[in-house]
Image (cartoon, rainbow, N blue to C red; front, side, top):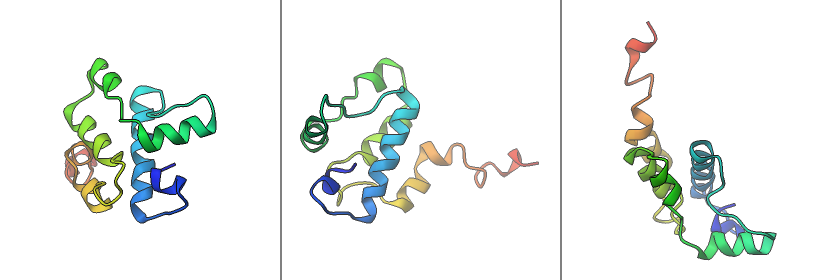
Length: 104
């Protein structure tokens, strides 16, 4: 849940937060923010900095780190947009549109 949603607000950028959580979870097999209780989890989402330790330790690509960091920006106004996600190097690297020869 995006930080702004905890406060009862939702914006289109709130879905980008969810995309960042899914990408983090897929790469690392763990959630970017955790807590022993729902209250602790929400507090960590709102106040704790994103821990990049596992992204570095597991030698994730610079593109993947950049994408996740931009998706998980706590300020929804500074979060990457949907269009920017689609043009991000980590996404376009594997795009069928970019690599149309993969289809043949």
